[in-house]
Image (cartoon, helix red, strand yellow):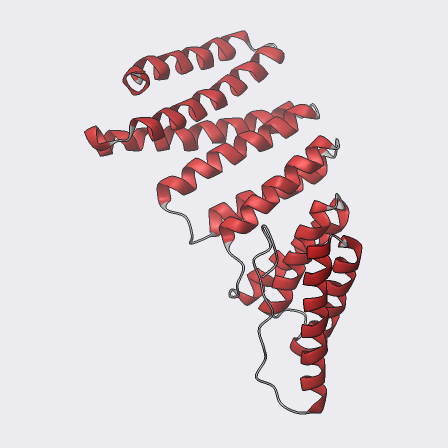
Length: 254
């Protein structure tokens, strides 16, 4: 298993015969060489070795096999760590495409989401807002479709990601898209905070305070954009909603 966020390993196939066996052997050898180069800090050589293993895996198993997705993901993480963001984006996109086709394999949705969130941050830091938006939308798609999320967690994570997407749109001056995504963020986070009413006294203060803060942050973003776009009444109404929510939940802040 590769270090850090790289989570996949090469599985042996059950194929027999000289050609598949040879391909399987060489693929495994290249993969292990990639691990060694990675450990030694020879990252260009590691990427090259993983790519050799990848091509052999494709020839042996086909382009849409889960093992191929796993290798692509590992390569993408290494490319991202080396600031090869364009290449990493391509690798992740292919890995996720295969994962949807195969609907199986070793990739874990939470690992993929964390990696894509980091990729989005790196794109944003380099001024590539479109790249950041692409990675963020992929995160949102996974959060919406994955079976790895409990309902409340799904709504919370989607609400936070929608606010991040709104901020990216705001950064490039697309205020209509920013308002749309920020407003959807508010709706999802409001439903999360409302769920605490059902929990009653058993609600955890620390957890609830975090969720209230996320909701208020999204409301402040909506209000700020309305203010910038000369919609003072909508801005005032939104800020008032934030005040009401904070007052209602004063108890969670002791």
